[in-house]
Image (tube, rainbow, N blue to C red; front, side):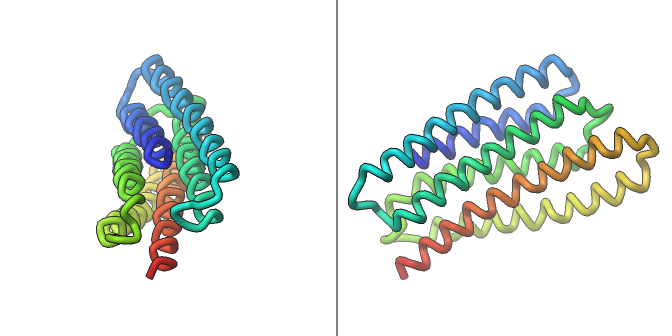
Length: 197
């Protein structure tokens, strides 16, 4: 179920990356509708994880960690949905290359989370591959922080339209927050690994 939940995030992140490159508002709206469907499906998977958790006596790792992991994966997907919603709702005049690069970083995060979810079964025996992927997510988050700061500096220096500035600032903020949510998932997985040591 964790693999399925992460898969929903990957599909939504792929749509978001495309949406940020897409000039057509009609196509952006269609991609947003796809993301919305992935987000709804993700909510159902999260509910199923919680349902199974309450029914299962023996779990592969700590029940509280399973609960938190389901919730954090869901929050990552919620942020992808929120980012797409803002782009469609605000309809900015132009989308800077740095925003599209952050979108690609979110997609990389989502792909890494799928890989991590697929490796959870063997976490106790061989945690190293998962630790490496968690480190990659951390590196992506640091890179996005730099992009975020650079983008905001440029935005405040060059954008003269106050409404457009607010729109773009809100969009870049939720995109940056999305990579923070991916890092929170990887930080939790790292904490689970420590419990096995």
